[in-house]
Amino acid sequence: MYRNILVLVFAGAALGQNSLPEDFTRCRQKDSKLSECLKSAVPDAMRRMKKGIPLLSVPPLEPLQVSVINIDSGAGPVTITQNYRNIKLHGLTDSVLTFYKADLKHYRLRTDSITPKMEFLADYVMKGRILVLPIQGKGIANITMVNLVVKHDLIGEPVTRDGQLYMHIKDYKVKFIPQRVILYFSNLFNGDKRLGDQMNMFLNENSDLVFNELKDSYEKSLSSVFQEVTNRIFDKVPMKDIFIED
Ligand SMILES: *[C@@H]1O[C@H](CO)[C@@H](O)[C@H](O)[C@H]1NC(C)=O
Image (cartoon, rainbow, N blue to C red):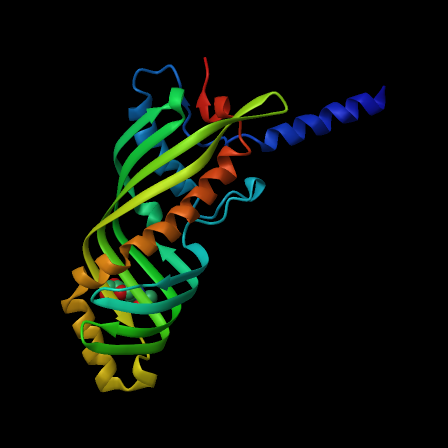
C-alpha cells in the first residue's frame, strides 16, 4: 500500500519535469490567433531561458555556447579554412519576432526574428586567401551582426512515445540577413600589428563579400544548434503541453 503511494508520488514528480516552466505563456492550438500568441510567447520564453532550464537540460541561451564550427570555403574570391572553438553567441535573447506561422497539422513552424546585435565570439584559427591577399591567424574572433534578420523554418514530425505525442524537429533551416557585419580577428599574421590592422580594415571594407562567402557555413552550423535546443524541449514535453489542446 505505502509502496503504491510512493510509486505514484515519484511518477508524478517525473511527469512534472516534462512540462514547460510555469512562467511560460501558453498558447492554445485552437486559438484563431495561435500564431499571434506564439509571436510574443516565444521571445518571452527565450528571455526566461537566459540561464537555461536545468530540468530539461536546456543550456543557457545567454550566451549560447557552441563547441566547434569548421568552415572549409572552396572556390571563389574567399577561400579560407577556418576553425572556431569555444564559441559564445551573445544577444539572441534580445530577439523579437516579426512574423510567426504555425501549421501544427503539418508540424511546421515558420518565423522571422530580428536580433539588434548578435555577437559571435570565439577562438579561431584560419588560413587562406581573400581576393588576392593571403590571410592567416590564430586568436580571438569577434563577428558582430547588427540588426540581424533570421528566417527560421522548422519542419517537424510526430513521434509517439508512451502514448504521448511529441513534435520532433527533423529539419531546421535558417537564413541570416544582417544589416551590417563587423569583423575583428585578433593576432592575425602571428601578431604583426600593421598587417593585422590592415587586414581587419580590408575585411570590414569588404564585409558583404566576406560574409556572403561564409554565410552558408554559419547558417548550417547555427541551425543545427537551434534544432538541438528546440528538440531539448520538444522531445521531452508532449506537444499538447507546448501547444495547449482544449
Ligand atoms: C565585438 O565587436 C563589437 C562591434 O565592434 C563591439 O561592440 C563589441 O564590444 C565587441 N565585443 C568584444 C567582447 O570585444
